[in-house]
Length: 64
Image: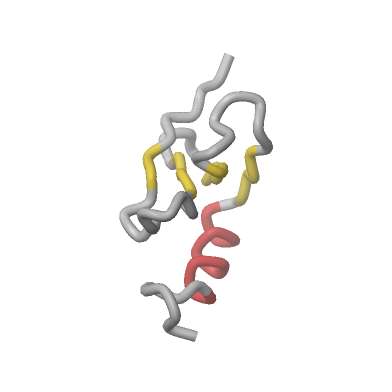
């Protein structure tokens, strides 16, 4: 049974390049591709690792 409550990123584009994240399980941030919500891979990160990763991502398309 999936215990993660995934929410689509507010920065996801309208062209299908979307990720979903779940932060409802203590000590874990789960990330998945919204195009493969069932049976697709789920990346599980410690909150500090997620924060480091998120700092490296552009906030808008083409920002880098």
